[in-house]
Image (tube, helix red, strand yellow):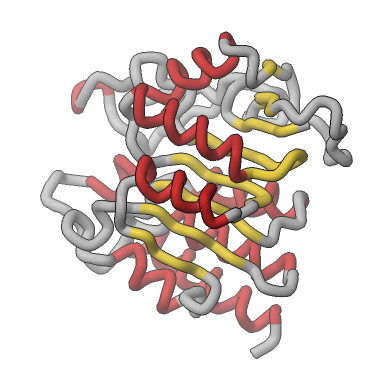
Amino acid sequence: MTTDERGARIREVRDRLVREGPPWTRGPERDFETITLPERDCDRLRDLLIAERVRTVVEIGLAYGSSALAIGEALVTVGSAGPRHIVIDPFQREAFANVGWDLLCSAGLDPIATLLVDPSSVVLPRLVAEGVVADAAFVDGSHRYHEVFVDLYFLRKIVRPGGLVVLDDDGRRRCGPPRATTSATSAGRWSPMRSPAPRSRPSAATPRPRWCPVAGPCGCPIRRSNRRSRSSGPFEAVRVAACRDLAKVR
């Protein structure tokens, strides 16, 4: 199967997931629409990873597989030798009945993807000990402050200098990601950026992550009409793409 044929197969699964939803969902009403990464953001994530020519990506949080399919499409499009997609989700089997993983397999991505079902706080130190080096990471797992902070701590050891760490839901100020990224910035390990930086070679003297935004063409906040409503929980319907959504290591 050619690269174009593999990409077309992935896009077919992605399009069907957007049109029809997953074949199975958990109990809460509109659970898929509430928690999945919207299609346009999946496309943005895919394009970003393609531009970075990634070969190895670590993803925390699989759920229904929307972002994982976009990451897989990026890896196939880049076409590097030995692509690797490490997916961490301790709830995939019990809470999601393997629906996200089954979609990855139906898209033909299981040869390059590995599902690890232990918590990220257990898996990430193991990857460090194994000497795994990733080009990028996507974090959309636990939203508890201490767990997101631990994810960032270990991802800084895993993602290569010049790589990317992308966080979902960082604009929701009352949940873990923005608090964790603020703490990381305050600790001096991450420095803010006002806009996305062009791809450049890392400097060995300054291997520090830097944050830059994912936003609309004008830099405005990204609105989520299909995200959680005001009445359904503590989060608002607007998720702001603040200047800490992407981490770029110098």
